[in-house]
Image (cartoon, rainbow, N blue to C red; front, side, top):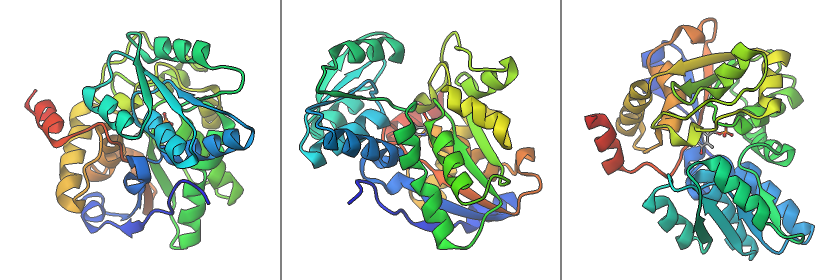
Length: 304
Ligand SMILES: *Cc1c(COP(=O)(O)O)cnc(C)c1O
């Protein structure tokens, strides 16, 4: 049995009213480990487990690392997570609660990832947070479920960090003959690596990440994410942190679910009835979730 859950798909009247459209929410905030990441990471871990991997190694101090830790606990495989110094105490505590060994190394994800690579032995598996076809295949189950539910949609909103979710959703749409359905790909200012790739004509590395939406903080999107923007319609939206944060607060009031700013980013264009929604009547919003935000943290950001 898969490690992820078939999540609820509910209509949102508050977001519908705000945007003047029909809005459906795919509630992946309710996945075990708190985000959509367990879909792809669960599949990658199960596959590596079947191939005989004796340990999983992850380089993410956020939702990806937590999903690996969860998968390892469920499969009975030990997990080591190398996280950058920027990761929070809370993230460390959550990983240890899942039984993972935590090592802190490097100023950014790049350095943590390099150490994770060097630590991974021959019979161990390094689980990438976004750039792996197995991961995309797992993320695509989100579209399978939404299509099976049968009420239809003519656009999908999602957030983009390294682009794994985008790749998975695009793959899922393709296998259901839905290449014509636009993907509205949302990033925050300071973490807009997909927008940079589109403008440069290929993935480029941002000099730095500067956004409270830490889960979107990949300096460079994976090649496949950029290729999708050439193969199908992907509308790039970049918005300020303050819009993402405001969307999180409204969403907490409207649906009683606390999500990270990384997730608030894809709710914001709906609350704001953004021009990118033009021509779309029935929106499917991927409520990607995230566990790194607390109410206290949200209040601190709002006070800034
Ligand atoms: C990882 C993550 C993202 C971004 O996903 P990518 O596959 O890196 O593009 C967005 N939101 C949340 C909550 C995440 O954990």
